[in-house]
Amino acid sequence: MLRIHGSAKSRASRTLWMAKELGLTYEHVDLLPRSALTKTPAYLALNPNARVPTIEDDGLVLYESMAINLYLAKKHGKLYPTNPRDEALTLQWSFWETDRLDRQLVNYSNHSTGLPEAERKPAIAEANWAEIVPAMDVLEAALSKSQWLAGDAFSVADLNVAGALYRGLFLDLTRWPSVASWLGRCWDRPAAKEVRAMRE
Ligand SMILES: N[C@@H](CCC(=O)N[C@@H](CS)C(=O)NCC(=O)O)C(=O)O
Image (cartoon, rainbow, N blue to C red):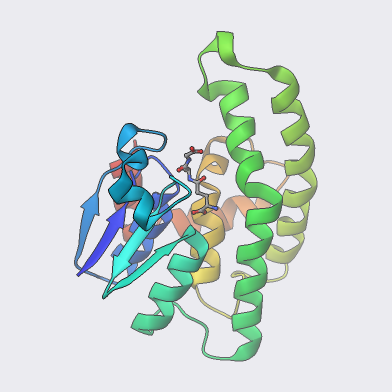
C-alpha cells in the first residue's frame, strides 16, 4: 500500500492532494518538517535529505514532491498527459515552479507574515518578492492564453504548480488575474479542499 510521509502543513500537501485526486488508499505518516522524527535512522534511510514528502509504494522509495506526483499520475493513468507535447509542458512547469517560485514563496511568506515578528527579516522578504513578481508575470502570460498549463483539462501540471502556490492563495493577486482565477479553479476541486482542511 502507498505510504506518504509528511504533514499536510508541508510540501507533502501536494502528494496528499494527488493521492486524493486519484482515489488511492494510503497510509499517512504525519511527519512535521525539521521534527526529530525526520532525523531518525529509519527515516534517513528513506530520505537522506531529512525532508518531506517521501513515499513508499510497492517497494519504491521516492522523494521530491514533483517527481512523486508525476510518478503517481503516470502509474494510475489519471491526470497524466497522453501525448509527448503535453508531457513536456508538464515537466517544464514542474521544474519551472521548483526553480522560480518554490523556495521564494516560502521565504517571502515566512519573512513577511509566517515567522514570529522578532525573527522576520524584511530584506529576505523583499529579495524573494523581487523574484516572485517576474515569475508570476510569466505564469500570468501563459494562463491568459490557456485555461490549463498542459492540454485542455486540469492535469498533474496544474496540480504541481497550484499545489506549490498554496501561499499564493493569501497574496494580493490583482496584478495577475488569470493566475488568480486558475488558482481558484484548482483549489476549488474536492481533493484540494480536503487537503486544505487538513492543513488549516
Ligand atoms: N524539493 C523538495 C523540497 C522538500 C522540502 O524542503 N520540504 C520541507 C518541508 S515543506 C522540509 O522537509 N524541510 C526540512 C528542512 O528544511 O530541514 C520537494 O519538493 O519535495
